[in-house]
Length: 108
Image (tube, rainbow, N blue to C red; front, side, top):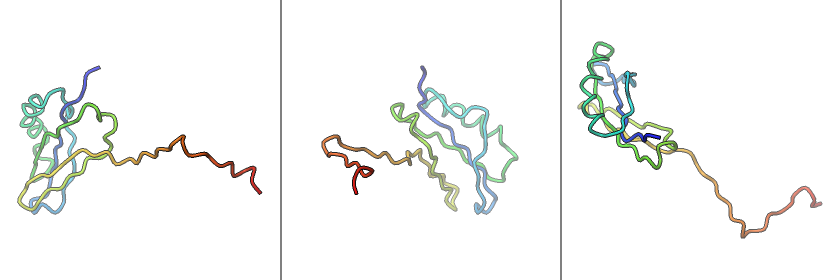
């Protein structure tokens, strides 16, 4: 199985940077960071005209967490800088077998 090492995020905004949204590109996941960087200008060309201002960024993907990422957090600053990261937002609950469990159904 091949691992994802980088994700290409492309964002389109209005000219005043107040209305921004993610734009779909033909290829958005890559096996190397270099491949993502090389594809970036072509992807931006593919979405040309879909927004007045377009910005793109390659985000690193930790292969160990590849299946756990469930959120892309991003923000475009007024100067056009894109801040973005991949996040794991799910909460994992763990229990210990050292603590005895209580049977609430059998108690009065």
